[in-house]
Length: 227
Ligand SMILES: [Fe+2]
Ligand SMILES: [Fe+2]
Image (cartoon, rainbow, N blue to C red; front, side, top):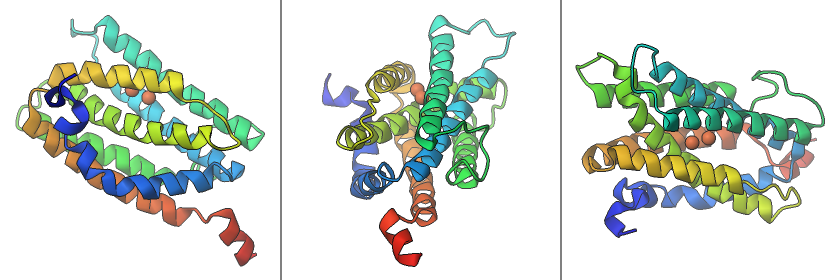
């Protein structure tokens, strides 16, 4: 793969997110050692995966003749990721976690806002003044930007969990996200200006969500000091 065809460099994601890498790794390292908080964090990931799969459903109306086998596979895989994180969250919590509530979902509202703003902002940039079939037009772009973030975050998360007592592997999930990323990059990767703009927009929203997560979560040591 040449440098030019690398989605990380082309989108500007790699450089723009270098600043986030160490703090994200530190946060994840704290959280994987705190099972109740880790369960709530995983349930938030489940919610975001569920929203991603729902977004794909909405983008594919029945009157279109464009619903491909690849898109159905993508949809099925995102739904399975939501299930995977929900199941692992329950395992971590020691009991079932029903739905996505304030109690069982870390930063539920900021996570909803992150996704809502991302979807609205990207769709507006992509479709501009041409709202016809806008969901369908926006699909590869919204997916592309979400896949960049999913791959970026899950690579770090996988490394952190492997090195922790949790020992949960994200390998097969990551392989699917990497595949989705490659597929979306094939569809839209040539428009590098737009790709850069959309990725920068997402990075800003991600930074805001992460700040909220950090302030919502007190590491165990600090909780012990407060108690
Ligand atoms: Fe996913
Ligand atoms: Fe994906």
